[in-house]
Image 1 (cartoon, one colour):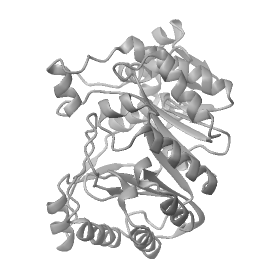
Image 2: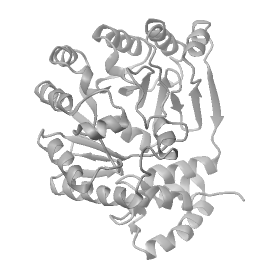
Image 3: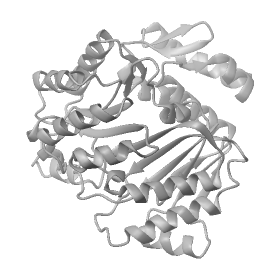
Image 4: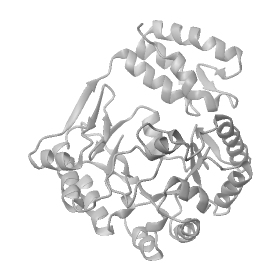
Length: 376
């Protein structure tokens, strides 16, 4: 089984923390959507006949699309690839796009999962991040979405400058009030070149407080687990039966095809990525050229990626898989490097799996980097 990701590279405005590829100029939206459909056709043989089980509209802001435009892209997927009978089809959406009329229209399409970028229910946080919506729109979007969609997820951000633990708890409680089956939550990060990075350097916004972020991660984990959510990936909490099939397929190493400017693809042995330039992407696709770079992954690359993704998940890193897929030398190296984290209680060995403990989850990426196989 494989997945298809469709990158919609348009936004109404730029969030201060975002370093994803997008444009606020929508004049080329029609040409872009034609190019996406053309790329699907050009790459129809790349999945080797594997059936598609997940289709994901990401971005950017996919909820800027009209329902008819979404339908045309889905028809292009189905016209070029075998798709299972009940695929998971996710649309990322911003609250300000989800009027009652839009929600009703979306509910009549094949989209069966909404991922709504709430980020915070409080205007002061939204203003700092330069989000396009207000807190009341976040609430209104969820009131409408819960009436028409069963499979819903929202994003929340913690570690925001000025976000105290009390307001963070209130964010979580507001989310829980809607009975959501899935919540994704991320620490605010400062990416070089973003507006947030500039503001912090100029002293206009306080620097991020890692200890505050750690505390809020712990608060999040304790509350959601007490409410029956499974912490199945560092940033993702789901009720049983509502884990994101799209994201889980990435973490488990399944094939996926990334369509659109800046989109990445993976076939098990190669990773590729499209050019991050809208006009150039459109021009080359129109000429029948795939504007991408391809990297062949070495055994070391694939081991490192597996360790990175595995330690972030409930399923951990399989020692047996490391031994058989990458070689016994990698298995020995992994256990040797992991020993200090086992001693510190940050990792645990459960049978033939290495998993992060509750104490180690917040540090998972740093631990993983220390387990990487690096040639000095």
